[in-house]
Length: 108
Image (tube, rainbow, N blue to C red; front, side, top):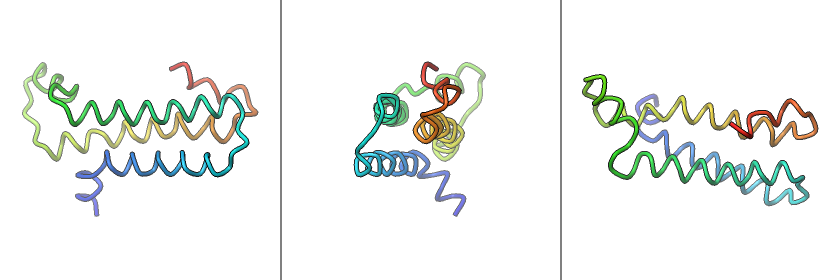
């Protein structure tokens, strides 16, 4: 199970994000802040795919700078902390949009 999560971290993140978009689309009546969050979800997913699927990813750049060799599994597993952070930034304002403190992650 852990190997599966490490290998397919980007795909799992994409599925979770698309489910959030689908549920938000079904709910329908969204505030402006919630609509901004949905745009961020889509942009984060696009960015993560671009970062991992096209040559010159940030992981390879940093590994070369510090002189460490990483394999494909380690590179894919490096997306797990990023995905957790991005999902936290997405879900918090989406659910707690009535509280001003919840929208603070949006500018970051």
